[in-house]
Image 1 (cartoon, rainbow, N blue to C red):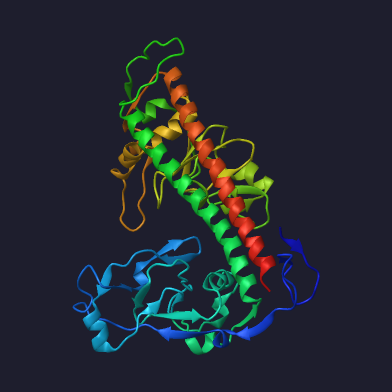
Image 2: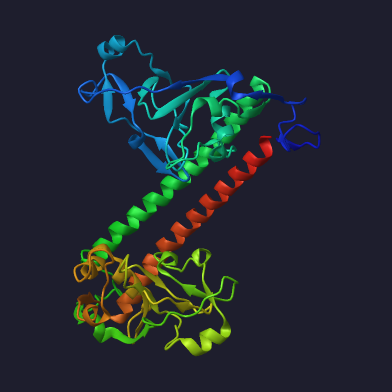
Length: 409
């Protein structure tokens, strides 16, 4: 059980069995920095030996990059020849150059090597506590300004850290590790559900999997239809660039806000006034219109729901279907093979675009309306599960962020 503390110079959140002030030190007092070294392609040969990591071996996870697996190894003879001691697993790894600081937060091997674009910090304190502590530090302010921000040990050594006792460090680290485990489990679950949905969509739209009516009877065979024959109205404001404001008024939806089933209004940065909305646009969105990007990252889709009054930028069109289930049409257009049909008619290399006059001629296999509803409801139920897990994941990350803010000073 964690209790609140009002004592100065101590964290807001603290385990009750610990008390007293923390000790302020510099990183130079609680560990040592070590730069990596370079190895030639010949020296990196083989599939065994000591793992050798480069910046390119770091994979993006959230706002950090985490080293997962090495693509290169250096054998003991080469290491002995250079008289270079491998890095201990109880270290934090930094990239020296780049727009972001890359931290290694997982124990990737008992010992390993890093290239000369990286450096390691090996603390005398609890390594897991130190890793968590680094998540609270805005390291960018210690970067050397240049064409690319860079970091060196002499600057990082001066960073101050407030340290509790080693037993308290260990308890904090173990507690936060449990939160990290929960976050990792939710991330994996979300990814697995996404892959499961992708596989089901492939099965459904190839007709390898069919649905039956409520009475157990077979639905009719799917019919081939042209996209244009199913569209009632195209909401198209291309060629019209409205005056925008930054103040939150009526959202102007751009491509960055679509791509999921629902529009992500948090990503909307441009707005139009009610007067502009009324007088500027040719056509307006209705509930169930499928938003479809025609320029840049083409064939990205979302469903518009009229709970929010909004307009679309000129690189998006709204497709309104006359007699098809709009949720089904969203899934049809976003299924991988169907979506690729639009890529085949892209024009332009630098800024690809898709013309409505061409895409309306694309053929799709379409089931009867009752089967469309069955498919849409089934896939929507999976989307709901993915969204529930996504919500839990976001909440867990926010919880972890709050813990870091309150458990470290």
